[in-house]
Image 1 (cartoon, rainbow, N blue to C red):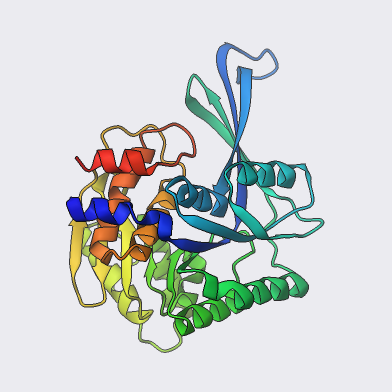
Image 2: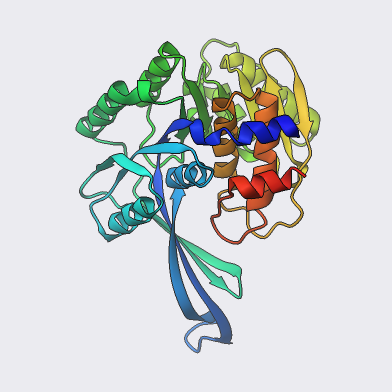
Length: 337
């Protein structure tokens, strides 16, 4: 535990670029006391509305809350929600110079309506079309110009259109050329493009869907696995090891909710990490916390196993909070007692 604490205390030395789909998380808080006369649905008496950075922006928020230096690379629309998101990021002193604006694009917003602290419904506003060539070119130029300034790059792929093959190939090439850590919170449709990265952090569903997609898209006949459903621990182990080898990854950290995590490493080691969560109120953004802390720890000199253990403690803290949440160095150090 002493070594883990020393690693956490070095988080403030890390410089990380976070690239991907930016989301504004909106929360409408209230209470329900009656059913609508118009339809058999509850009527929410709204008390307040709050906004927090979500998606890729939540990863940056996690890193900043833990003392790391972070810059965002992504796209918003030219709308009121973009202004709110940028305002929330500036409050948190997150570098927004890599945020590009695309007129005509909706800034992605996830609105969660809560009654008595329980989520009732979620409403999503988004555009998922591919970026224009001009915008893609601008993002590539930003990466080329700034990659040397960072210790690591995190790719947050929510499938909203920002992450594409050309960007990933160029980013991975530059990151490896400059010996940078590169971690990916993956979208199952794009697994074949993550070849050679330091780590990916899928959950069980993402891993399961990735198997099916890789089977379909593999033209080399090198990806061979008997199942496309992950019913047992053995199924998960087999799938992760196949993907690790097929994509030439250094590691895969699979998040399994109440079952904890599994870390697969290139040298064949597999480590089961049980959950440390005491209470689970909300899992929104827990995966963002995992990749943020895992990458921060690697930047601070941790082994992949040490980084996974610290990320597990961090996830245990944030799922005990309501809404898209972050943790702090103080909370993390206390959780290690």
